[in-house]
Length: 96
Image (cartoon, rainbow, N blue to C red; front, side, top):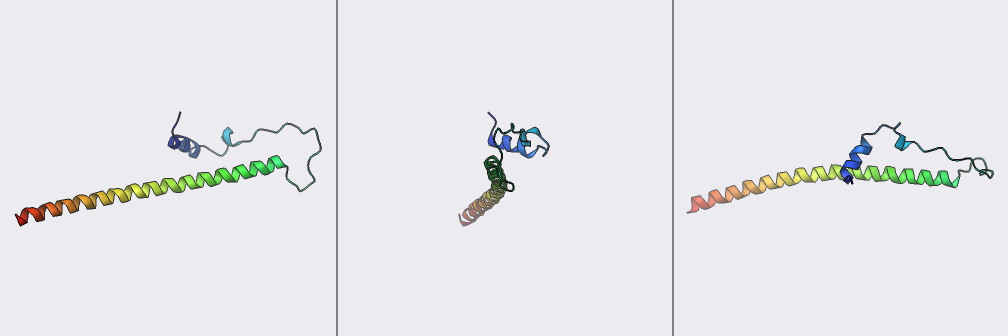
């Protein structure tokens, strides 16, 4: 199965007109619809899921940015640690 990163890359690379984002037509209802101005429960559920998915995608994007920032910070700290180790080694050589 694809990794989470592969799935996100695939979703982020799709166009809004992609079939995955188009809801299938609902079959005709056999009973009268809700009162005018009142959304159907199915529509409310779709809207709730849509908002939940948008929230998830936004959170995922923020997490990816944070991950990259942490990787960069880790590289900086590793470089600083290596420089510190070299400085300590030089001081020890001069002391002996």
